[in-house]
Length: 228
Image (spheres, rainbow, N blue to C red):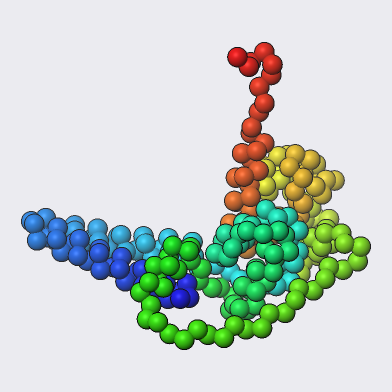
């Protein structure tokens, strides 16, 4: 079952449970007005969280190929609900296949496996659709240097003025000098992640990566005198 269909099935169940709960509270004597209002608030919060979290941008295929950090590819895989196992090329291949399958739209619905399994359990059995042929990933150009050192996401060019405006690393929030292109604290490409964070899915990736990097940087090894 497609993520959008799975969410529809789950949302129907949530709606029915919400209505049944409200009806039960009214039946046992609670004031109908606050009960109905609370039920509506629950539905609105559910819809808002669902739309904000699982209705995401589709990263262009050309941008997927710019990610050479396996942690970035795993975070993207987690956002899009694809398999997070495997090496860099396996992760990129699955992400490119996902993007090609959703390339005709700017946004798409994604869902965790638990929701997809729930939707599939309610789905009527049908014939399996034929898989679309997959194309191999294009080889990286040149001497094998990471593409993101030359090109930014969205086809944007690197700009000295943009770089000069970066005061802190978008990943670890460390202070950086105007002449620096790489964060001396965590090694992040400053301009790459700054431009990436301008998109909705990019902000989510940067936020998740930032949390993981800051946790690592906060970990302090105690001195010998502190070990008991």
